[in-house]
Amino acid sequence: MAVLTFIGGAQQVTGSCYLLESPSCGKVLLDCGMHQGGDLASRTNEEQFPFNPAHIDHMVLSHAHLDHSGLIPMLVKQGFRGNIYCTRATSKLLKVMLEDSAGIYERDLVYENLRRKRRGDKPLKAAYTKRDVKTALSLCEPIRYRECLRINEDFSICFHDAGHILGSAITELKITEQGLAKTLVFSGDLGKQNSVLMNNPALLKSADVVLMEGTYGNRDHRSLDASILQLEQVLHETWNRHGSVMIPAFAVGRTQEILFYLGLLQMEGRLDNWQIFLDSPMAIEITSIYESCIDLLDPQDSEKLRGNYGASMKHLLPNLNYAKTTEESMAINRIKKGAIIIAGSGMCTGGRIRHHFKQRIYDKHNTIIFAGFQARGTMGRNIVDGAKKITMFGNEFRVGARVETLGGFSAHAGQSELLDWICNFEPAPRVMLVHGEAETLDTLSQKLFSDRSLATEIPYQGQKIHF
Image (cartoon, rainbow, N blue to C red; front, side, top):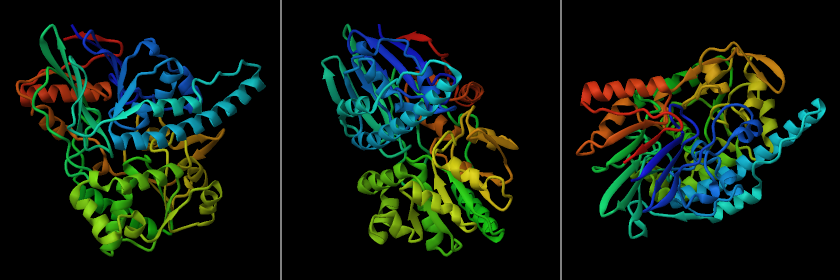
């Protein structure tokens, strides 16, 4: 009988990780994500696997976001040498994500160990190195959407477009035990319907067990038209206040979406004469990957890029400036008004956005726009929840800037879309709600039962189920 263990992403949004065990497939790890919040060195060194990585036979990666992939190098460091199955686009993005994360981790580790040395504490050992990142990337085995890969006569893997970010996948695992076929479907992160650049999430019809994410299981998003209008109004009001705008954005997905919307506003004459800065070497490189994988994007949106704008964000948005170097990033500080600054990290847990906060967050003329989910314990969540002061670089800063949240720009399906997706399965499978905060998943579970007569389960961390 197959056993599924919920290691991470159970009643929490970060740290996605699930272990499938069966004589038919061996030990298969679904995702290997890190938890968000705190500095990267301390956070990574606190992570522990409740299994021996050397005993894992295969790994299946739903997409490249670090809360799904960030601990893969540590998995390799501790002995994993199996294949990492993912889409080709995910393998391209993963290289950028893991190399960038490793660089940040090494810098944070040096800083943390200097602090420990001054206190007389023992230094932290590196949980992984860039060599482990290189090894991890060599293990990637790309699979096309809807191309079922047979690992052995009793085990196969098939990916379907999840519509969340470039390369994101719904994973369909088929195993046969003693002549009995079983199907496990893992939604990964499901995108919204009609999300810019992305295709709609694929609809599957049959499964025995489904792991479905519930990040926004307690609410629907604001309409896209309303969110674009809100963005236009907030930008215009900030322009009239002679301020600047800071947008913490995830390098993968959210950044490209924001750039696309800004380009459409400019094309329609609805954008003031802003200087727009993409201040993230990683986001710049990933934007280039999006442009190179244009055939995987939504046909209508990709046609706007390809047919009219040369398949380039800079053609779509001529006043876009790329800040790759530290010097180019620091030069933005000299601009006192009229700048839109898009920088990571999306939850303000690190990256260049914090340096821009240092320069501008106290000023009431400026605006911070959040366009994505902010997990508990992150600086972004604290600001969204109304924090009047934040601590960065050992100093306290007053939050004087206007704070706006654009819910309609989320890359995750809202409640109604989650209900429609899961209810496409016939007959109803055993449904496990994951990747959501506990009270959010509870609301989603109640909604599924009251509206669709579908009973669901909310697993806890460490729980095992048999099927």
